View 1 (cartoon, rainbow, N blue to C red):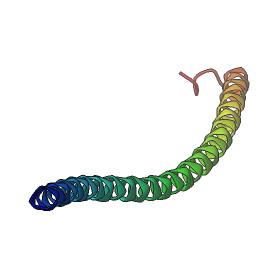
View 2: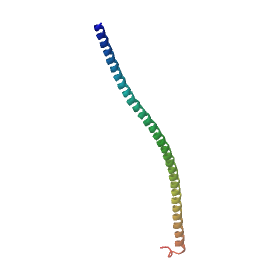
View 3: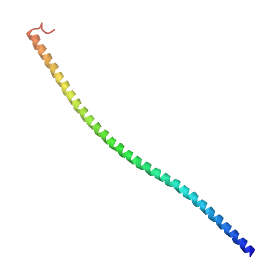
Length: 112
């Protein structure tokens, strides 16, 4: 009976040790899962932040493209205006030469 009792105690001791080992394993796994869950949460927050940042940058890019198009359009208008003014100046210079020629015919001493 003493042997059976000793064997029973050893078995209980082994079971207790086994349960303790399993509990330690469970605690380690739980700790690891908490860390992994925290990492996942951080990654999800990063993704949300990056998506918002991307959306803001996309909107800013669209505004910049609109500004660029407006600037190009304004520059084209200014270029056209410049060409018209250059043409007008050339016409006025031609007219000035013509008038100077007329003045020379009338009185050569007036025009130097």
